[in-house]
Image (cartoon, rainbow, N blue to C red):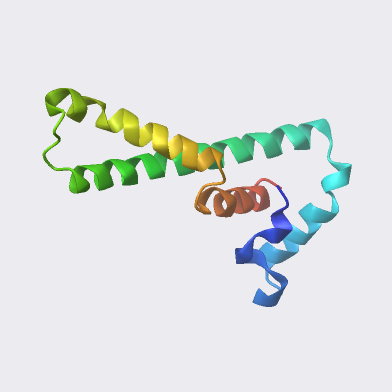
Length: 112
């Protein structure tokens, strides 16, 4: 992932500490050590997992409001949470809605 594409840290938003760190991270991307690469991968995974968890809660609430009285009865109601979590995981793995990207950028800044 190229952190320089993050809209929260674009060059047009001014020279603040966050954008400085993102520029430095982009410049050093080719010089990453194994430890840095492992930390980067762990941050990306944690951010994606957080986004999937958040989306799972959101989708669960959305499904409960969209279908308050499921036609599938108790069985459908039992598996609604699993459906919400599966949809959330797929959305997060497909690029998500931007939450993971923002969190990962901030974690990269704080982990330096």
